[in-house]
Length: 215
Ligand code: DX5
Ligand code: ZN
View 1 (tube, rainbow, N blue to C red):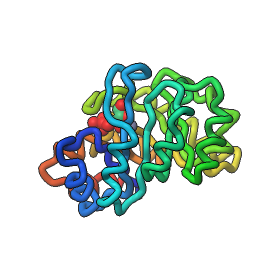
View 2: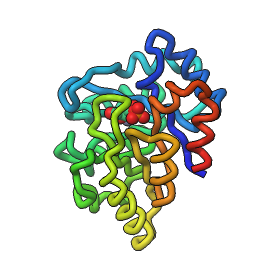
View 3: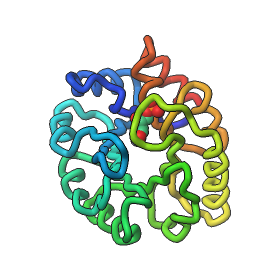
View 4: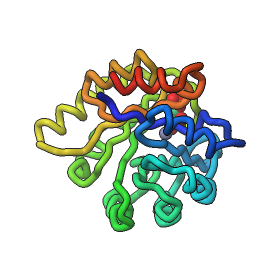
């Protein structure tokens, strides 16, 4: 069984609360919130005030994926807005160790994300300090992109390191995850599947979520 984190990037932004309710009823385990600043990635989405507006609808953990430069400036804002997990990109900060501590001090779980071309060695020193390792399976910035298959090798490597070192971080993949790629990465040791367009474009949202859960 995989954990399914439904990416709200593919929801109807004019009715985010309603769409959050939809995926909750359909059995999503978490809501994945993609924050883009137009600098770290070539797209802009929404910030903490918008997440705060979702709180009256919230029944599952919120996972904020910060695709922003210098994320240390906004950790408290995203925590105050109700984020249970805060994920930052290793490529977006000079002081990753400090940033992980900063996230944990707020009481949130700490995740670190890697772009497809960033090797695992970029985070090898901190794997014992994080709750989640997010391996991007597309170049971040947009929903609906094609899964980059070479990242599967990194999923296997991460699972091996976790096993060899007796560590407990969860492995998550994000980008192009559907009924084929989801089970493929789950079989390699991925615990959490982020999926946006596959879920929201499906005529049967529950069926799509179930197909990932059973991966
Ligand atoms: C991409 C985002 C993803 C995105 C995934 O930059 O981080 O979370 O919503 O969308 P799909 O599942 O459509 O690839
Ligand atoms: Zn994401």
